[in-house]
Amino acid sequence: MAHGHARPILLGLIGSPIAHSASPAMHEAAAEAVGLRAHYQLIDVPGADGAQLRTLLSALAPIGFSGVNVTFPYKERVLPLLDDLSPGARAVGAVNTIVVRDGRLTGHNTDTTGFARALIEAFGPRPEGPVALVGAGGVGKAVAVALAQFEGIEVRLVDADPAKAEAVAAALAGHAAVRVCGSVAAALDGARGVVNGTPVGMLPDRGTPVPAELLRPGMWVADAVYSPLWTPLLVDAARIGARTMTGRELAIHQALDAFALFTGREAPAEAMARAFDRAVTPPAG
Image (cartoon, rainbow, N blue to C red; front, side):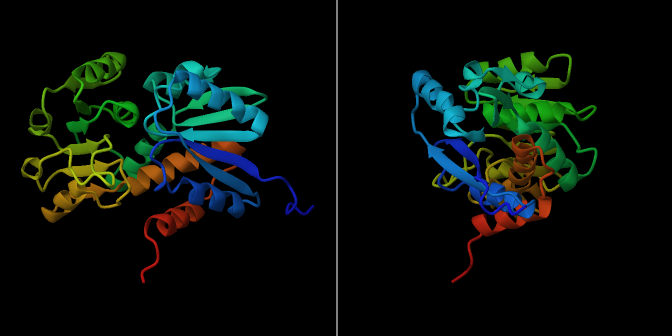
């Protein structure tokens, strides 16, 4: 049967600012690769309060969405508005993927599964710790839970809001060694790995969450930001010869896992990776 006339699967992304997102390209290309059609809508809502978020989420099923991704600043704020949470999303306390089925909304977190897979691909099955993790918000929490899956890794968490870091440490108590550090410098002292889980370094911001002089050549350094791909942090790390992982790997792996949840189909990694590269590195000239 020809599927050309079938209604496209409707997907989207809720967050702000999201103009740089590679998600539409990745999900639409993945659908095409498995013989489906998808339309992926950017839903850029700056400064939505709880009531506005609730209105938006309650419209997803009637409009016909199969699911949406959620990004900064709403990964934590959507939690109380969902019908159900996967164990992973509940553990993290943040949602980046909402599946819409029979009018019910279920929250998942593919940042966690995606980051763990990306890390193994980049740095091998046993990434070395201790790991300094900057940021205890939506992405930082997902990264902390992902790191907790690796045996014997100490996570040193630092956040501009120490209460946030303390809450993540408390949530992971018994599952991982998590230490809250009062400063980035303290977190990096003797660390083998560094992860940026904050939006610092994401365009138009040109900052870095870690002063360059704290980085060492023997470290591995990962960034969750992919706009730009080479953030100031990663440029500093590469300059001294540290091993690096850009936000590309996390972006692709979290999207692969989300696509499988949205469609029930195995997502084609090659198609998603190519789509990401086209979206993030536009053709020269």
